[in-house]
Amino acid sequence: MNTPVFLATLRQRFTSPMRLVLTATVFAFPLLLLAFVPRFGLFVVQTGTPYAFILGAGLIGQETSSGVMQLLFARPIRRWEYVFSRWLAVAAAIAGLIVAQLAIASLILMARGETITAREVLLVGFTDQVLIGVGILSVLVFFSSFLSGIGDVAAIVLGFITSQVLQGIGQITQRPPIARIGQELLRFVKPEIQTGLIRDLGAIPWYEVVSYFSTVSLCLAVAVVLINRREISYASE
Amino acid sequence: MTAIKVAEVSKTFRAGSVRALDRVSLEIQPGETFGIIGPNGAGKTTLLGCLLGLLRCDSGTITLDGMPPDDLGVRRQTGYLPERLVLDRWMTGLDFLEYHHALAELDPARRSTECSEALARVGLDPSAGRQTIRRYSRGMLQRLGLAQALLGTPRFVFLDEPISGVDPAGVILFRRLLTELKSTGATVIINSHQLDEVERICDRVAFVRGGQVQSIETVTAGAELRRVLAVRWSGSAGTDQARLSSIAAQAGASLASLAPPTARFSVADDAGATRLLHALLSAGVPIIEAAPEGGRLERLFETGGDAPGAPGGAPADAPTAPSGPAGGSA
Image (cartoon, rainbow over all chains, first blue to last red; front, side):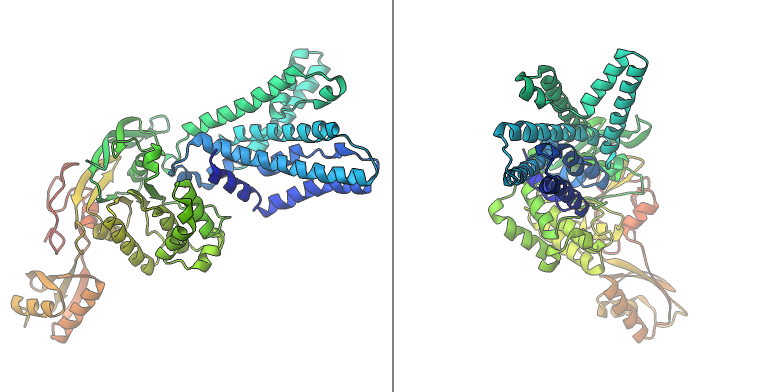
């Protein structure tokens, strides 16, 4: 990992006023719900996905379109370090925000006199949301390595819509292969592990686990390869 | 040992349909200040991109101190100022320098001191260092970019249009910084359209056109560049060679050639030209026209790379002799 890039990414992501406002909203809204609506529980902390989009959008693509990469890669930095450090910085930010949010949410619930277990907080809250956040972040990094600006967000939204349409067509036309393609596409654009299965059945959903980690590692590996191959000079435009 | 060696480098874009560099070969010696000039689209920026390892050559080799340009060891010793200077706008000037100081793997213990010194070196005061880069003017950006390029006393410095958008004070500062840089033994490569500046500061200059090095000129080799001022007068009374030479000498200039009613004088700079004209007018020479002649590189540019005074131009790797004070073709 490259520490200057890691730290600069964190600072960059939390310097943008738009990102700050959105992050603060996503952070505060579930906590306000918990505080003022008694029927809501820990499940309202579903913030892994929004954090990934807010903090991870254009992680590489915006750097490409702004033109700062040219100066950066003239420095002694390996490109895989650059990709990995930026990904890790946002992943750490997502995890940190979710931990802080869950800590406050737990305090609110305890103040309401409810009992919450560490298992519930860890599985439902932390693991689920961090895995979803980091999964989507990895897909964003993949798209961001070849789409400029925030084209990565558009690509994921398009992938999500396409997956829903394919699943719908598969069900309506009674063609399971089409529905399956839709499911797999969804698994790619929104990698997640249903920890509910672990909680309810005590069984590890191996297919989901393998699918999740292979998607995340594949996305990062392809992003590194694409960034490594990229020629960075305005002469190439 | 040659500092930078470019051997038969070719580079194409768009699946080979655009040939940006065509078998370019050149050698740059350690401590040399080397200019690259040529018309737009000649391949200058592509050459710089290849030298920095940001672009991959289709064929040929480039080595810096015997290593490929993308070697991390080379990059630790490289400073680069791009033409399209896009900096991290959300950072302050000082943050930006500290970031690049860290990226360049320079001593963290000296980070704060060296970055503050770098700001001061390019004439930016501490308050400018605390401003976010998005509030910088074009000239300030260029100075900040130069400061980051010079961090850590690099051995290879690549400057792409370094004085573009810089005010006259900035140009003077740039010349001073370059003199300091040369004293450290750094090898400097400058890509610029400012021919007079290139001529003033470079030891040798390559003229690139159509992706090929048309010629390499040895220019001033660090000597002060003098300009030529052509002066025309009416009549011929009192304009003999001895008198004009005497007047010119008093004004710190020299008579380069005389073909009445025109004389060509060699002057140190614009102020020298003003002094000469004042002296001539005071001596009663009825001047009707005075015009500076283009520099040697300007004439090289106009002739499309054929070395001035050397019909047919020089071979790409055969430097021509340095010119005299009058610019070489007098």
